[in-house]
Picture 1 (spheres, helix red, strand yellow):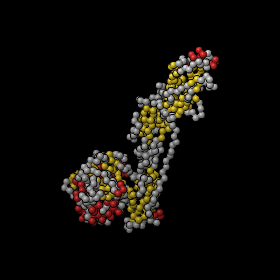
Picture 2: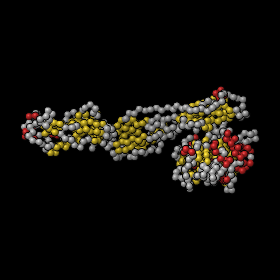
Picture 3: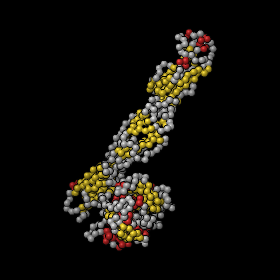
Picture 4: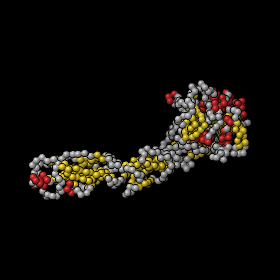
Length: 620
């Protein structure tokens, strides 16, 4: 079968815009006159630059920033510092580790206090450790902390020494809880907006492990207990949420990225932001998924946060940590450093998190030999909307002011398109950029059909839904298998025959041609020009001469988009294939009709049969 192919699709392109709205927090009446905040998106850096001014010069102030994206319903405090000073409050255990920091200082500490080694020891990934020189760690045992919390938390003038506290890391936290006093002091630390990272088996209170004073702080992480000891875990976790915590200062990976960690498990329910979950199948013995009332909350979490507090399951393997786990820990500590005395901050949590629209294909064309195909397409990038406000706290008397809520949006712009051409209907491109322009030319694969898969990628690495396009060069046409015709010389219309309906189900236009028309029984074929007056034939001539023809019937509503021949094709004058016309794609239909040249001097009933052969080809 001779085939050719050309397709053109014209589709309107829709531009998307974001209109962000939401409930604002309750502010002090004088907020607008004291604090003002501006937010300027930086697409090339994928962050929002925040600047604020405070007209109250009566005392020094510290500040906290609050943000809510278009995908969130609640404002949360966000990071506001480019460094973090951390106090690791560790359980007392016998094993020790020795190491030398990037600053050349040597330490021997209990293995449960390995955080300092992880953050400050040079490694193959960074000469300043997993903390990249941004995170410094001091250490104190939980027993010493319990004895006098303020001696470790505060300077002599009563100001706090640290941005973040980290409790851990050891299985069951070495069975060492906070005292009531230490819990109260930690609670006060959290209420100032400073961060706390809780390690494995700290905030837990069930029928097997109970840390009641730690658990009093669980609400800060939006965590609840499971009364009956229920565990779930393994050695692989996957990224479940994208944001600052997954890509600053370390790029951990996009949603779905799988990371390796030592064996660990959860035994609580997280209701806040779940950043990482255990990867199924769960390899920790006895793992069972659990949720809270009405199916809310999950015990599948490895890392969860809420505002300035978080919980990570590091610690079950008694001080062991993979490079993946140490990077995650560094990012989390940085994320929790949320109080500043500066009046500007580049919010790397405010990122372009919205993927572009699904690409729209406008046309698919090919060269004359159909060896090269070109597809044209476009996609619209989408911005992520944010709302912000800033809280000021007087360092002398605790006076608080709040700025008005402001809105902005961040759109990094299109980076390009990820394209795969294969024989599978549902392939998903991996996000690597195939081309940065709105058309792509490729060599035609073998076979009668193939698929084109296109995803749009923006400069933040967000990948759109995939457009799948099927290029099918198989013709699909339906028509009757046989029809009957008759000649009645006693009628005003001697020759009658039903129309021959042709329907094109192909995804491309099809040309209909007559490839053959011949008698198979009864009377042999005759050219229509043998007689000038067929009505005057004798009986002998009538019984031996008959010319059958076929032609397009042009009627209202017909889908013939092109007619190649307007006169009938007869049996006697068919020397080669004769195109009749073209039917459009996707269900277009049209009729053929039979006509004949014959005599009227019939002396007996005669049965005549013909074979009509149609050829259907892809229209150019």
